[in-house]
Amino acid sequence: MQLTSPRTWIFILYLCTIVYLSATPADEMGYFSFIWRYDKYVHFFEYLILGFLLVNALMVNPMRKSDWIAVIAFIIIFPIIDETVQRFTPGRIPDVMDGIADISGGLIGTYLRSLFR
Image (cartoon, rainbow, N blue to C red; front, top):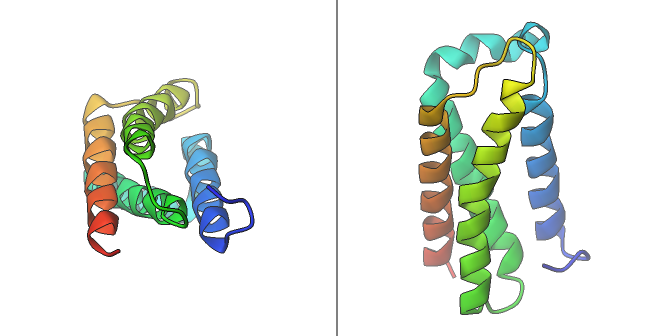
């Protein structure tokens, strides 16, 4: 990942947004509170975009096998951490199914970005 690349900064800003929203207590969600009826879809598309942006940032240089392994590891580990953070956030409830939606979306996002070289 090159820190001088706009692709990298778009990924970092999006990642920070996910972390911020995950750490926000439920009673402070305001506008976003109504979309949680569609919880699994939101999780899926949130991480589909994250996976797409991660591979997009890394594709500034040709990706090696080790890069792909790191991407898959990140896409599996980050949602677990994200759901764990929600356990300690007031009014938020961690859910295994949310984690599965996150991982599925992330993997599909990485795959879709790999198709568009």
